[in-house]
Length: 455
Image (cartoon, rainbow, N blue to C red; front, side, top):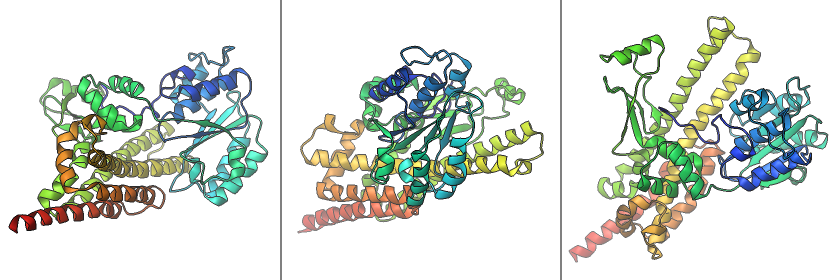
């Protein structure tokens, strides 16, 4: 039983162009490039984040390093190289993600370029994946441009970007562009089923609500259930966030087996209220709780984000302990700096990413409810909504928030996302800034209704 289904773009497993879900044209373009020996020095993947970039990178790496590659450019998927690439443990695949807000010039000069130039001792060609390449600052781009102008023969760069606007034209022109797309509903439905969702109405709701993002879909699935020990009832996962480690003792004999290193038996049950449900009932809370609800909702969002980041940090501590143990030292701090620093930088990035992703998940959910309010104001019916299961609630909300106010708030969402993602803005302040105009509109509507009834 899987307690925490991973993001589909990060999960290890089958490797190969046919295994890439939701990006058939992109996978086919890369396969043909491999088959025809037309793989250049750099690709630029342009599209929404988390829709298959990592799987495409691994498929390309397998195609370039598989010793039993077919004439059609398809890797065998079973050799040592393919298996390790699928697991993410082959040295021919290197990933660079921003440690903080942006990719800075120092890592480009001191890490990226030396890595690209280093002799590859295991494999044929190195594939370097630059995550969020559109977040390279200008100095980093200028430094990176030099290695693109004189690329090492054994290295293929794969840049992924949501948009090419921040990138220098000289970088874009030196890359072969491959466009990615949001997932279709059929692929999302299949993926939801693979994650354990078998209720057809729940499938329909979550596929629509995910709006083409497998990452959002996986988050919704994680959010559906509470996991706990069936004997001591200790909850270990709620709203997609680990709340405790699996129990190490209780009155259940099977739970005692955890002491011997065996997995804890866990029970899964549906929760009455998911995080998504909380995010979609904000207007109703404003109507019933008044101005205090603005601060309460913002704090709930940031607390939820902190809990998710804290769970990631706890996993990091366990990883540090394993690394120290495997190296035969008493603590992670005793490891050489060259070993510690990359791990610490990755951990820092992953904790921040978990926090940011939670805040942006709220903004996405709240934004989808605002979109639905506009849809209803335009005369749309329930089948036109993003949030199919919230039609009754949205009809009530539409009486409190006119389309003009919803559209205004939607325009603020983009600024809030950019502030949180790019400028490290304070999440609670950004959430409050988005919520306050909607609360003001709810207050005005209620006040007007009260005044009208009195006259």
